[in-house]
Length: 279
Image 1 (cartoon, rainbow, N blue to C red):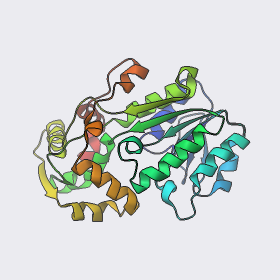
Image 2: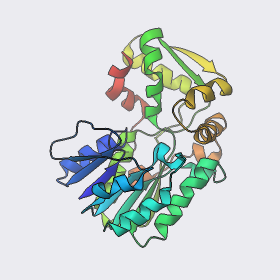
Image 3: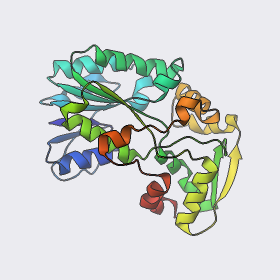
């Protein structure tokens, strides 16, 4: 049985679907109940509260670990999740980390994530680490303003990074969970091209077949919006990257193609699959 943490998110949902379609027994973990593919067991749990994970991990052979905001919760002890997994009989953990662990190692959120990576490496478990850059699905934050005002508001409109489709992350995660060849590997996951917020706006407009205006926010305005949803440390670290990406953050990684045997999906492909959110 494979446990998927964050199973209702942009990575967890397609990963859960892929594992179920591969014939695996899956336990999906999220804070709140949600519809799941047929045959998938759901457990409501909060990764910041370790005791809530005990039921989810019972009988599990592998764990996909996505920490998200749980990493920064006041009482969080994310490295303890690794110990709990090992004590529960889990043999393999695939960790969704961050590209910034390598490219911005001193950022507060990156230091915390690196501690989780290190704990996993020292655990004696089989493991793989995925380090994605920016997510194409971050564009969902613009969906309401596109629907109601025909506008995208974002900072640093002409500064780009190679954003990755979460479905590609999910496929790589599934491969790492199911195939021993990926044990002990660290994969950097990016999209196939550097794309700016202004260019993303153009892609959304093209898919809609109607104009969408781009409005550039200041850093302070963007931070005020972001901190409604993510911890301030993560907001600052993210803004540091998207305002002035360094050469490592602009690099197109070959790792998606190495694992999946195909190039990563471009942003316009993600938009086409999700365009109804913007209508």
